[in-house]
Amino acid sequence: MSNAPLLEMRNIRKDFFGNQVLEDINLTLHEGEVLGLCGENGAGKSTLMKILFGMDVIRETGGYGGDILINGEKVEFATPFDALAAGIGMVHQEFSLIPGFTATENILLNREPTKHSVLSEVFGSRLDTLNNREMASRSDTAIEKMGVRIDADMTINSMPVGHKQFTEIARELSKEQLRLLILDEPTAVLTEKEAEALLESIRGMSKRGIAIIFITHRLHEILSVCGKVVVMRDGHVVSDVPAADTTVEEITRQMVGRSVETGAAAQEARSLDGARTIMSIRKLWVDMPGELVRCVDLDVREGEILGIGGLAGQGKLGIPNGIMGLYEAGGSVTLDGKDIPLNSPRKCLDASLAFVSEDRRGVGLLLDESLEWNVAFPAMQVQNKFLKPLLGGLVKWRDEKAIRAVTEKYVEELAIKCTGTRQKAKELSGGNQQKICLAKAFALEPKFLFVSEPTRGIDVGAKALVLEALRKFNRESGVTVVMISSELEELRSVCDRIAIVSGGRISGVLPASASSEELGMLMVSQVV
View 1 (cartoon, rainbow, N blue to C red):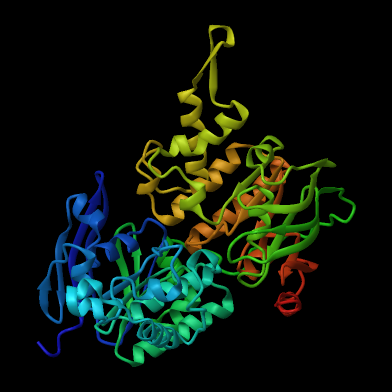
View 2 (cartoon, rainbow, N blue to C red):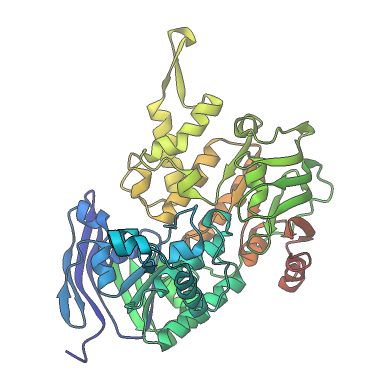
């Protein structure tokens, strides 16, 4: 069996709630090989990896069909602990870190080295103490393997989002028995510079004999680092080829079954120089962990799509979170000449502001509720929409027909993959959950919309659709949109102007037609 692949998955099948999500999946992976796994949201990528990693959700929903072989021997992982014991690690799309613990404590959680003490010699090993020096050494070694420096003593809730992702990866690299690492959208929260550092780390892991399954919607990364590309569509493998024998355009066509424009969408030239200022931000500071917002001055023109970009932790995410009252903030914000009270989310909503958060699970969704309830509830609560008056208006009752209609409208417009509008939000893939967050904001019909990382975790086919939906919402409804994104090309493709945040301040505002070099220079002009 010495020539057997490290991993074989044979004829894997799986259904959720009567919906067949995987059918006859076959793939192989050899020691040190990097396999790129591609597919639209809902194609079945994450479900396949959950099967491989022995996730509880698979067992709790009836298990799966087919066989998994490690080095030629059939295995059945009842829990993730079984997979870990077999040398398989996984970095999930959603973080699984303890917020109040440091990076070191998270990296070595449940595997902390200990040392004997006088008490433990008398009363037993339960009174051993942590060997902090050894913990720091092991943590530093794992971090060094990535080729990216993070502060091992910083607590998770104080970290920029990119450093949280690196902490997750370092945790897996710290496991000596690691033979296969699954990375599910690891670069979705990273800047371009951080993503390149991670790709270099993947190359290093491959040279050390660690096999990688790399899931990402950034297809150029797949071709840059992978030896083989497997494409899934609608629960089937439609392509399994060497990376050298394919292209981004071919992968895209196989993913969606049609040709998709993968470059920046054409941005129509718009002159908004004469437009009035609809929002004025002055001396804004925000106390958001991992984000530096200390003195932001910015004017937003009525009817425009204004992009906000910048390096991780420099303040771009903190601006909308502070204005919308999710974190303590100070300074002044006016909308249509009226003061917007800070630290008051309800008053922001009452003023016809809406916000699509970058944290879809923590802030954006009611995971245990239906899609209908997720889309309609904010509008019901804030605007009394989707309610029918009874007894002369003394009682109001949900208008189920209207709720279903608005949900079906956005399911169709945003191509949300679901079994129906009554399906629970937690049962959708990450990208489709993101689309529900957009639908919820659209249903509010706001005057002003903040959208933070709207395409994070969304595949190449759906990304263009979502950006076009934002552009259409802006053009047809006259809604002013402020879009925050880590991807400069995405901002350039849809925005009229782009503001760059650096060192907690606005370092400059340029038209979207400005070059990447000009925007890049603004990013590093005030970094502290």
